[in-house]
Length: 184
Image 1 (cartoon, rainbow, N blue to C red):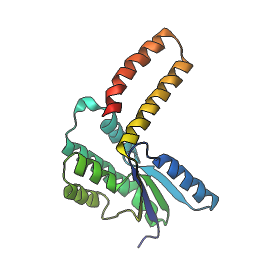
Image 2 (cartoon, helix red, strand yellow; image 1 turned 180 degrees about the horizontal axis):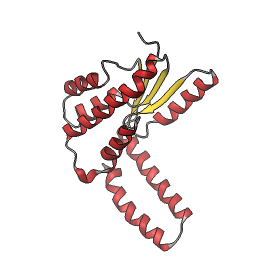
Image 3 (cartoon, rainbow, N blue to C red; image 1 turned 90 degrees about the horizontal axis):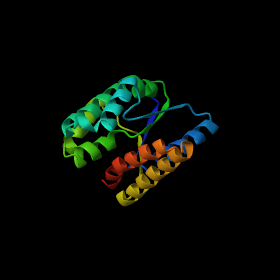
Image 4 (spheres, rainbow, N blue to C red; image 1 turned 90 degrees about the vertical axis):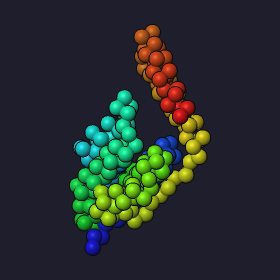
């Protein structure tokens, strides 16, 4: 039996997972507790490629089942090469998203099926589930407000760094493409 523990942080984008993970990291460092921080997708080189494919290639029109399987491929690689070895070494692993995200996003929201995604996740994790899941609750309407504020901040920063007319045009075109995604 391994002595390590797995803690996952779950919640909508903008709920504060990164902030809370950073606070936990600071607390662990002050106490000299060994840990690794990782994320899904993207905790391995394969995961980084899959993350880009899943999150930045909408023109591929990935079907819900294909999306679920790609997330599970990332998870299988991630658990085999990062999470389980660290747990066997007795380390604490903290991860930005894990098991529950796939159940919520692909299983329920994308209609693949909660039970199917749960079975696939258990297969990918070799039966390992988080010892603790911290769910940061955020109302979806608040998430939309946060996304809109972030888009405005990126716009202001870009204009401040390069105030040429070319930059303004690029930002304008980019903003037009961001508006539909912020309103989804």
